[in-house]
Image (tube, rainbow, N blue to C red):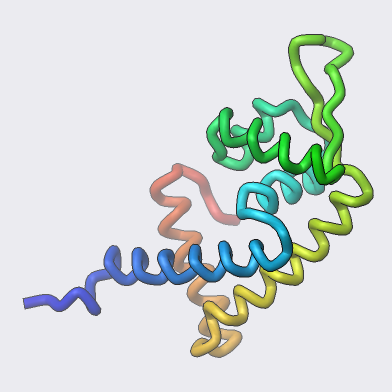
Length: 145
């Protein structure tokens, strides 16, 4: 009989549960949520984008994108302006305050990664990332270079 401690799906789920808890706690100490980080990182990587594009790029549901962008607009981390080509659509832009906040969140995220992977050597961390990437790529149809 196989014990749960030897079932990959169970172990991945347990690791994910701990990871999500640490991320939520870490981002909360920085006044953010995971959605905030994902949206700010997407804007930093790709530049100004529509709300719909941000939702697709980050895998966040449209209503959750709007709620998170409303919160970040209130904090002046992003700006929304009408798209000159389509006034029904907003273009979201990262502000200097948003860039600074993203840098803070990147530091928080690095600390969380260290905490999650604390029992692993650097080589084991690289191997874990490689193996998890292969699993994800297999199920999403993507190919890792």
